[in-house]
Image (cartoon, rainbow, N blue to C red; front, side, top):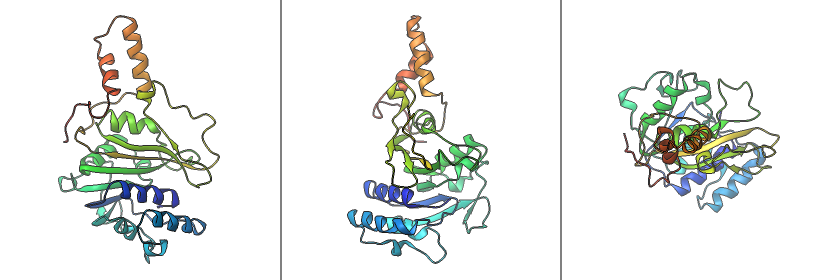
Amino acid sequence: MGIDYAAARKLIQLSRRVPPSGEVLMLGRHRMQVRDRLRPALDTLMAEEGMGLTFADLEQDDGYTETFFRALGYDAVSAMDLSDFEGATVLHDLNDKVPAKLKKKYALIYDGGTTEHVFDVATCMANINAMLAPGGILAACAPGNNFFAHGFYQFGPELVYGYWKHGCGFDVLTCSMLPEWPRDKELDLPDPAQLGHRIRLRGKVPNQRVYLYYEVQKGPNAHAFKAALQTDYVKKWSDHDRAEDREDSDIVALYEKQTMTGEDRPGSVE
């Protein structure tokens, strides 16, 4: 996949909220794929953000996006892939553990549609965690509805909260259902553990392709993955244990941990 208008807008906004520094790793080497009719809208956004740039400043002769990331303010940009058929400079299969030289290296990892193509999801996500520097951010624009047959998997918000937040102690900066085209509004997706039930999207998913867009940060409570259970089931099991006077059960303790605020969650950067 590449960086289209929807993804470019979110990455620009991220760069204004969190001042860029350090090195970017793209998972897959992404092309700049902003449609002609949406380029004026991107120019307007960059003007509003005080960037002093237009879309023409972001283009490079080969159509890829290193210029875009450097324009956002990052120091260096690399791309990882299993093959160098698109010019990736870091060759690695994300089904296998990354070598020590890549650990804690990147300030930003951008997944613009790669992780759904990696069969071993657990190893892939652990690799991303390992490669992020302390304070680093994973920004992901993963295919959602109407991308059927695109890859092995279609991820939902439970990955963001069940895995990254509750399983790895990361801070969730944003999580949303992001339409490919701006004719429909972006929809924030909250933590099911805080809601107490699954996110209800009936009647809210537009009739176009949508992404799961999320940003998670390796903050002071981050750690290597320990365990993840789907959050709405944890609440049901916890409610059951409480009703059975099992207040000291592991499930009740897990639910209480899931509903803590970010400042209260225990953990340490690894």
